[in-house]
Length: 313
Image (cartoon, rainbow, N blue to C red; front, side, top):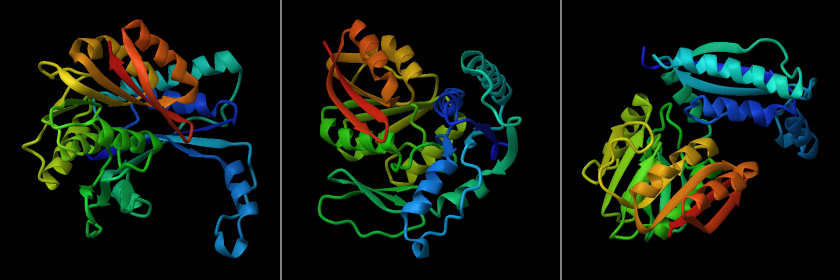
């Protein structure tokens, strides 16, 4: 069923945490990767006032649990094979790092969405954009533009550093003359930001059919269906013509693979906004973009993530 998802959890050492998290992202995790680090929880418990902190003492701080969610569709088997092969490759590089087998659990979108309601609340990002969960009410102030959002199982609520940096930069970059392509649109949040900031046209693409469905629902909820076109496709498949601004909030390897299409699709002096890059991969992305004639004009860093703005020569 299209509303069923598989939760994949791997119990690992601290040393291998980032490698495992990157692997799960690259396998197509749709709503980010959860990292449950008991050492960080124990540090928080000890540093906080106990009366205000309901975190129980952590008895085993050596095991980190990394979790991701994947839709139960025709791509699931290939994704699981890729994860297993990647885990073996990590073990080949650093030696044993797993505590027990990979854990699997089926979850429904309804269960997942109800969990989100505990943590996702109205948030203002930048000067103008306010992200409002569809189940909350909010009265906008002067100059504020509201995005009512129900992320479902698609990535993108604005709370993650990679997304919030993109939203902030789009408020600075979009003009009434901008034709915008949004690669890997997820919930549609960046496409809606571009439209609300006055872009002339917005075309959004995602490889995941479920993400396309959710994006269209969110866009319709915000009365932006006439301003934004959403299509299923790999990278920039389905986009016609050229754009003044291309935004991609994904991961470093896919951004690098996307660069030839970006160069072909950007108009002269166009802008490419790339986010979802971990700090350690910044140089890789920068150098690969430079080789394609894209110059860095701005770098934003937050919580270990980097958003890079490029300009086509």
